[in-house]
Amino acid sequence: MACGSPGTPGPSPSVQQTSAQPSSTPPAPTSTAQAAVVPNVVGLNHQLAQDTMQAAGFYYLTEEDATGQGRLLINDRNWVVVTQEPKGGTRAPADTKIILRSKKIGE
Image 1 (tube, rainbow, N blue to C red):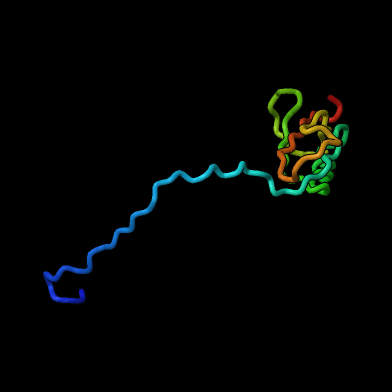
Image 2: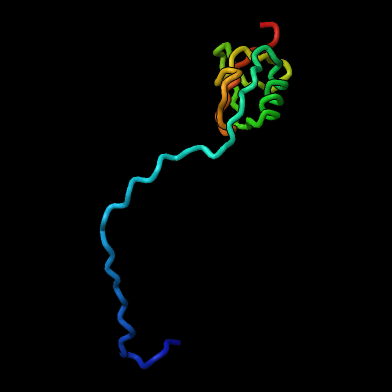
């Protein structure tokens, strides 16, 4: 049920004029994550390498088959890390993507 009598115009909408001046350029985004030293996990079994990274505050971990065969690392304890990015000993924000490239133990 509407208020007022039918055919009575309602209040007219108000329009507010604003200045069309360009805003200043916003500052470049910066990481708010704390920086830490990336542990060197080359030579460790893959599971221990992941545990070590997480203990140091790095949780954005990805893994790859270092042989290029594209295999999935199903049982991490059967794999050994052969390279990592970023390299161990460097400082990086805790939200940095860490890439662990591993191969099966004995390959």
